[in-house]
Amino acid sequence: MKALRRLAQGFEHGVHPAHHKERTEDLPIQRVPFGRDYVIPLGQHVGVPGRAIVEAGDPVRRGQVVAEPGGFVSTALHSPVTGRVTRVGDFRDVGGRFTPGIGIEADPFATQAVDPESVPDWQALSRDEFVEAVQMAGIVGMGGAAFPAHVKLSVPEGTRIRQLLVNGAECEPYLTNDHRLMIERSDAVLEGAEIVRQKLGAEETVIGIETNKPDAIRVIRGRIPDGQPVRVVPLEVKYPQGAEKMMIRSVFGKEVPAGRLPRDVGVNVNNVGTIVAIADYFLRGLPLIERIVTVAGPGVTYPANLIVPLGTSVRDVVRFCGGLRQGTREIVMGGPMMGRPVASLDVPVLKGCSGILVFTDASPSRREEYPCIRCGRCLEACPYFLNPSRLARLSRARLFDETKAYHVFDCVECGCCTFACPSNIPIVQLIRTAKDDLMHRKASEQ
Image 1: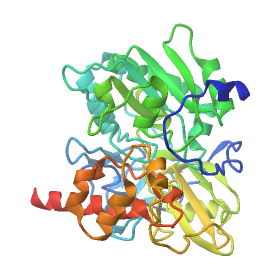
Image 2: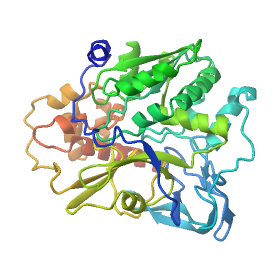
Image 3: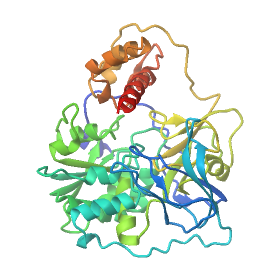
């Protein structure tokens, strides 16, 4: 472990929140039993929502396409169970609003086995056909962003990808689903990485893993096939090490310019969960119909790393973990730094749901807010070298257009500024408000 720390690579700025991974990092992945009711929101990825191609009363098979992509930046959606469509309409989302979705009732007598009609021959596919297949498999970024994976794999003409960077940092506190995935399905990680590397024409695959996961580093290194151009890079334990621009800086020493993408410096970045999803589809015919979720936090009776069918309600997942402890105050979908509180226990698990965290009254809660003292700690914490306090002040004054001059869209909402603020100012929430206003106005104009 000391040797790994000496070799660890990192980036400038960032913060060091407590890990809180000890309750789940050694727990093997287990499967949640199938329930009765499932909800598949049509807009559970970045971009254009999908278009439902089923109606109420239609029978569906597990893995069957139930919604086609609504555009290029969109993905197909599949039924997580064999059963019957109960409704196509509006359902409550994580934030409490109503959004279009598909309700499915599972057949209690079905085996729920996936019987793929065919497994795509990835080697025979052209790059465009491969990209289309990833889109129709419904695969998105599994680290939490839910950005359609096929868009990342669509490399413009004249752009050369030299390195495939597999993100195994998992820097958010509490979350251990990627950690367990690398230990228990290391072969799938390496198989999926080799498929993507060959299709991108990259020279090598680099897997970045924080040094607080020495067992994952050891297992992955021990499973690399002879002759496969793969290396594992131990990374400094720091948040947000898993942000793709930070990881590129840590691993390659390259700076991705503001407003540019990793592909502009010859790198393609994908989360380990995304890579395993690609392996599952092209080697086993399994589209994205389930994911691994870490259930943790002081309010959970039995923490766990679970395979959860998409569309399962948070209520069913928490019930499987023994229910909520007395004094439960808040449930967050995702990590504590970038996740969002759920409005109801009946909201569904989405493709980007990496964790379900339960906090109690005894957990650290939001404290009283004080005026900004111009201490500069948010500037020192911001890994993107922005001025978070100025952006927050402009947002609070509703001067949203002025925030563009201070590069508001370069903010990835990692939450380092809010974590570091001694005045307890909700900086990242204010920045998010400004970005939401600007994006909504732009969408309305279009």
